[in-house]
Amino acid sequence: MSETARAAIVTSVAGAVEVRGYDLPHPGPGEFLLQVELCGMCGTDAHVYRGRLDSVRFPALLGHEIVGRLAVLGDGVTTDHAGRPVRAGDRVGVFPALSCGRCYECTVRRRPGSCPGRRPSYGFASPADRPPYLTGGFATHLYASNAGTVFYRTDLPPEVAVLQEPLSVALHAAERAALRIGSTVVVQGVGAIGLMAVVAARAAGAARIVAVGGPPARLELAAALGADEVVDLARVPDPDRRRGAVLDALGDGGRGADAVIGTAGSPEAFLEGVRLTADGGVLAEVGNFTDRGTIPFNPYSDLLRRDITLAGVYGAGPDMQRRYHSALSILQRGGPPFERLVSHRVPLTGVRRALEALGGGYSLDGRDVVKLAVDPSA
Ligand SMILES: [Zn+2]
Ligand SMILES: [Zn+2]
Image: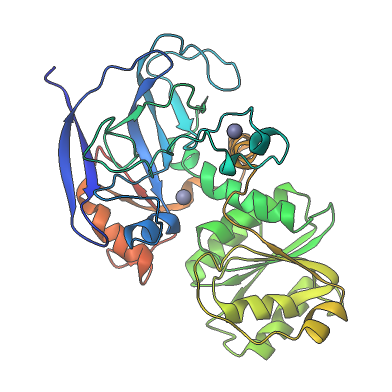
């Protein structure tokens, strides 16, 4: 076969990224080949790139937020996971993990992430120098070699469909924050997850949403996505004054928020989140995804006396497959300008620069990164 696929391979921890060529595989029963249109890049990829996930071996092909068109369907692949018929050429979003759905972890504990029969997830199924090859999204093609891979057909443009994973993380945060119809919400941080948290809070029925962060362009996007008020960190750098500004913006007599969703990712921001939470409220922390250190915390005055609840939110959570599906439904309903989230589309040759940007200053080509995505046709 003369057609070949290309993939951006990370050769070693924080090392060079080489674009390598591969023969196109022939999908067996239950498998399929996808022509990748866009693959989101997130903090997890930057984390893996730096060798902080033991299970990933190098050389590695990353990329787990995968959207593309079905190219070749193996025998028996006739519908998506919701039972809708599919054929070659249809656009789909691929769920990266595959668990058995029958074991104790999957059914009783409802933690499919701990399933002993779990297959290597796309974007983490290394090493890349051994078959089955093409198992990550930073490539022209994805070989869905796990028979029974979960995917959903969608007519959304790729730059919106690719938000399925970050929105599923935000839905997890909103659920852990126990949002109710009429809740007041503070979202700390307006990166991709913070912006998606605004969308999730709106979908959950929040009455008032205040987003805190920067720079101004991202705050403007937060407002366009549903935040009622925004507070610019740069304009109110002092934490005490900032607390006052946020409480004013909540408009509830200075009580604090029923729920705070923390996506800023520093221990200091976490403590600030505790102090923005109303007595009896919940802080759902999603931002301290890597170890950024410790902070003094008074269990009496910060927690018990105020009767607040602290919830840790790790990624899309153990129940992530359900949230993936919900996220797609919310994106498909439309309304907010979701298409503005992807700020950069980088070619396969730009994968290393993009990974470095996510691990550093969140700036690429002289512009702030909101959401990065790899476009293998670029
Ligand atoms: Zn991700
Ligand atoms: Zn299982």
